[in-house]
Amino acid sequence: MASLEISAVSKRYAASAVLRNVSLSVPDGAFLTLVGPSGCGKSTLLRIVSGLELQEAGEVRIGGQPVSHLRPSQRDIAMVFQSYALYPHMTVEQNIAIPLILRRLRLHERLPMVARLLPRARAELAAIRTEVDRVIAILGLETLRHRRPAELSGGQRQRVAVGRAMVRRPAVFLMDEPLSNLDAKLRVHMRSEIAGLHRRLGATFVYVTHDQVEAMTMSTLVAVMMEGEILQVAPPAEIYAAPADVRVAEFIGSPKINVLPATRRADGVLEAPGLSCALRVEAAGALRLGVRPEAFRLAAPDEAGLAARVVSTEHTGPEAYLHALAEDPQAGPLIARLAPAEAAGLAPGAQVTLRIAPGAALVFGADGRRVETRAATAPATAGVRHAV
Image 1 (cartoon, helix red, strand yellow):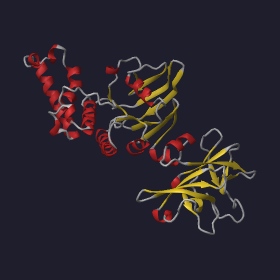
Image 2 (cartoon, rainbow, N blue to C red; image 1 turned 90 degrees about the vertical axis):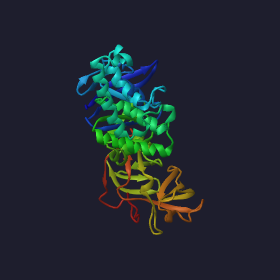
Image 3 (cartoon, rainbow, N blue to C red; image 1 turned 180 degrees about the vertical axis):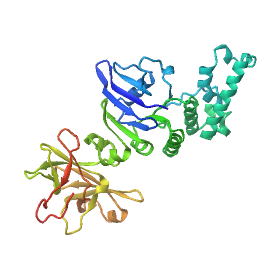
Image 4 (cartoon, rainbow, N blue to C red; image 1 turned 90 degrees about the horizontal axis):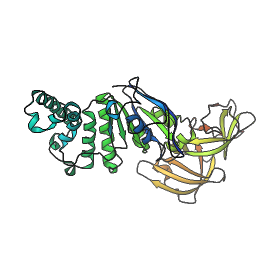
């Protein structure tokens, strides 16, 4: 296994810049997910790492060694594609074995009649069968080994594609949206299988997806990409709780984070529409206050907060989502995640007051980057009990 380093990689198609000076370091044994909206450049970056495309600038190193000049077959990587790319005329075990056959046997030794007559070819085929049996056992494909792809479900085909990558024992696994063709239930199951496989192998995984749930549940590291740039690389919990950029905060999290305009008073205390926050900031200029839906709570009758009118409520069983429109036009639409009991009886048109859990607000500067805050030493506004 090996680490992966990408240094100042750039790529253009015609007049469009797809990757802009991208740098990324993936430690040995990490599971890193590249996540971002469609067209942000994540699949292009993966194809450059694999050698299927060439960058215009920058360098790729695997295990500390430059590989940009090497062909894909020489980079010691294995790639799992979105389309599975299985050979339809081959069985499961044949599909898994084919990378080793192509690597270890000469052209004439791949002919069955010839292979039986050559001691070296027979020994290699026996070793290949052992490796294939090991992978089939790990992936639970024993009862499917003689089936062809047309006889398999989508999840079974995906396991075969993963097995074909595993059998090579590569330095780095690359996976390009491998679950996007599966239904929702099967995606949940396969997420668990791939994460478990990573733990068993201890290998370096680089996984591309536009699905933030996959990124947050499977990875040890998440890299958020937008418009050809990497905005932040961090563990999933940090990406969610401490996004470095407002674009990261808006992309990660469902429902989407609430973003309100804010200003800094002369004494440094932050103010937002309908709220006077007990937060002090050093940054000046246009500020934005980010509030996750779960950070909103309904205020008690004697508490101040953000006045709003209920638009609708969505009950999902263990929780409910309140969609509301703030009375202050600057604040706009809001989403709050509440307990079902809290949302009960809140009909469209009802008036509510929302408060923010202490310490749950995020503040972003004029450039979109998150700015540090500290608690105000004195109440922000006399008589206002609400604090962020």
